[in-house]
Length: 234
Ligand SMILES: Nc1ncnc2c1ncn2[C@@H]1O[C@H](COP(=O)(O)OP(=O)(O)OP(=O)(O)O)[C@@H](O)[C@H]1O
Image (cartoon, rainbow, N blue to C red; front, side, top):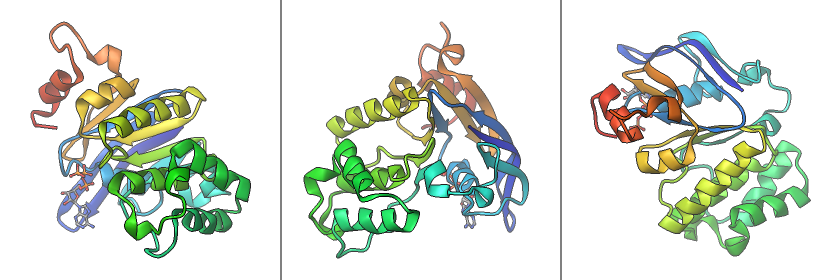
């Protein structure tokens, strides 16, 4: 479970996130939607303790990130495409992160298998395609077998086959009772992926709820809902 209460972040004169209150429940994928610059990444970074809120709070299973006992076993994150040592192989990268998080070698093998990283485990990370890098980020996030996942546009750079795989994979993780928050701009994808959505615009909550409750005869797709509520393009 992820909860934000009155969460706000100002960068000088810019209010990136303003009094944002929402809950992300386990058992279904929750899509985090909003136009460019709406504050999605800033919110995710506050949930993950990478930015200090100007006001309000964000908690994971009832605790602020800084108060989690074993963070990598409680929450896994894919944020931006960084953090790979260029000459480390994908396997070595996972071994290093497993070591830092206190996770076993057998767990490294498991995450490589389930994410497809096993197919390119011996290649230096500098030679990996964008889609391969996304899979490696996901594998890294899963090392601690966390119950909560925070993923910022994890489908970026994946080909159609990869996107279909990711959809099934994330739904499977949520189906195991995990909490999965995913930001995305691809609304057709989100519709097939998410059971819930949280929509923001200019740092403020626009709506949150089950996809089935938001879609209606008047607004038959998530795109209609989104464009009607945010007044902008995805
Ligand atoms: N470090 C920073 N310093 C100043 N302003 C920032 C900083 N980080 C983000 N912002 C501003 O905060 C606002 C929200 O940005 P954020 O990256 O959270 O949006 P986003 O919804 O993730 O956008 P996108 O969909 O384009 O990734 C933007 O106006 C952005 O310019």
